[in-house]
Amino acid sequence: MVTSCLKFGGKRGRRGEGPGGRDYVVPIFNGECQKCGHCKSEKTNLCEKFRVNPFRSTMRSDGKCRFWTKDGQPVYHFLNTSTFSEYTVLDSACAVKIDANAPLEKMTLLSCGVSTGLGAVWNTANVSAGETVAVFGLGAVGLAVSFLPSHDFTL
Figure 1 (cartoon, rainbow, N blue to C red):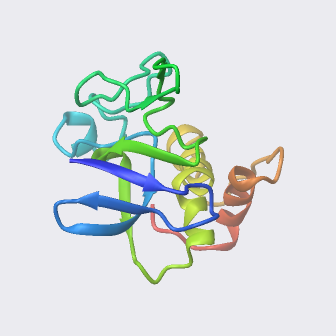
Figure 2 (cartoon, one colour):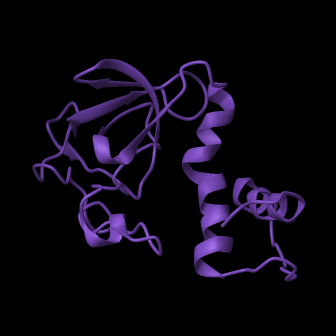
C-alpha cells in the first residue's frame, strides 16, 4: 500500500488512502516494516528496509519517483517522506494512523519534533531519572527534551 498525505505541515489534515479507506496519519521518516530484527527489537527501531538513507531518492517499494516537473524531469523524494512539499506520497510503513478527532495542528509535532526529542533522550543519550541535561534551543525537539523531567514516563 502506498499512502498519500495531503497538505502536510499543520495547515490541513492528512488523509491516507489505503485498503480501508481514508485515515488521518502523520508521516515518519524512519519507517517500520514490523518484520525485521530492528523493528522487533526493544533497543532500536532503525528498520533495515525503511531506515533513513539521505542518498535514496526514490520510493522504497519500487525504486521510482512519484512526482515530475512540467518538463518531465523527476522530483526526487527526501528522507522517505518529502514533507517539504504541499502534497506527498509515501510508503505505508512511513505513516502512523492517528485518531480522526485528534487536534491536527498538534499531531504534526508528533511525527518529527517530539519523537526526535524523546528518542534523543531515551535512545541516544541514555538519560536516566535524576540526571542533569543541557538543552540548546527550544524548538519542537528542545521543548520535547525539556518536557521530560516534569513527567513520569515509564521507559
